[in-house]
Length: 253
Image (cartoon, rainbow, N blue to C red):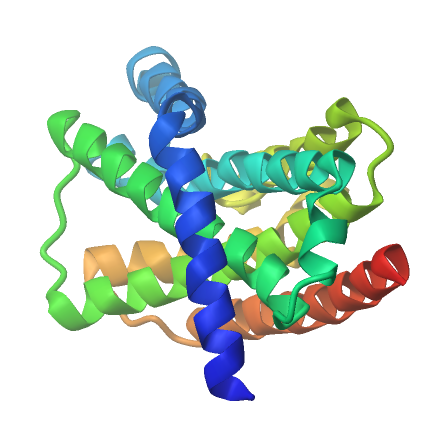
């Protein structure tokens, strides 16, 4: 059964990846907004923001990476919605394939596309002066957090893609997620914010994830932030996966 599922997922993943390679503009579009934010904040607002860091691009990059992911997952919802409307899901149901492999193919495609976008953003950050003395274990830890975060948000995108009534609705769900890093420690320290905003910023998932990645990049003791970040990512992933599968079964039943 597992071999059957893995084989079906691999075939459908190849189909989705071919769509990506034929429309590389989706990856380009995904990276443009985060890079624009990075350029704007570093070169326009950076001089007026006291982040307590020698280089503002070093302080800023973790939040920009999360915005990159949040921007990228909207295309997962968009592609899934188009598949639902085209009737291809019904055709898949008539074939002897594992049902969940259809969703996993979209999720893994999202992971690949977002990893490419993240690499592009990091390369631009390096050109802008980003530097890190972090070793291989720290970079692997950062990659692990970003992969978990991508999977968690992608399963939320799956719910949106399955539930949306229009193309615009399938993509619009990502806007609040993209906005979330702005009310966190991604751009400025949370202690500079007004009381209620500070309380929200300090207890939402983006802040702990950003702080953990920032500490790994700067070789500071990570503390409890990494465990809180992992708990948020795993928790969101599990809940989103369950709701996505329930929604999928209802749509194809």
